[in-house]
Amino acid sequence: MLDTTPLRDAYRTLLDAAATVADSDGPGPTPPAGEWNADQILAHVSLISAATISAVSSVASGAIATYDNRAALDTWTIDRVIALAGDNTGLRDRVRLQGQALCALGGPMLSEAELDTRVPTLLLSNGALLVDQPMPLRDLITGLADVELPGHTKQLLALL
Image (tube, rainbow, N blue to C red; front, side, top):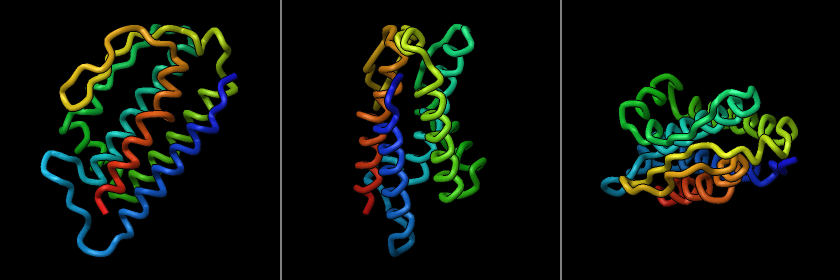
């Protein structure tokens, strides 16, 4: 069984940072040129979380799973998630609930064989290809906890 405590902690730390940024004085932090604002970061995290939940659900149901983060980088899609969530609080609620779902699905529900299932993966960042190969499902989940969420936590705190 995969211990989802690090994932749960990473979501909590990210959401604490997002709340700190949202509660900061002024009209709202302005990101450096070419960087995302807090809402865009949260929408991106929501899309990444949804893609991971989808991969976990596909593996658990015996369906063919893939993982591709390109939609989570698309400006139109990010703006659509922001509009659907309503506001920063709505985005934080969405990410919190997705984190809870992923921790529930990715931990006790999956067998070791399911966690070891190799999922065709395409990961991009800032236009650069990071991964284009099958990865174990467990690595997609732990990658959120170890790299993706901490990176976006730092990105949020840099807005202060």
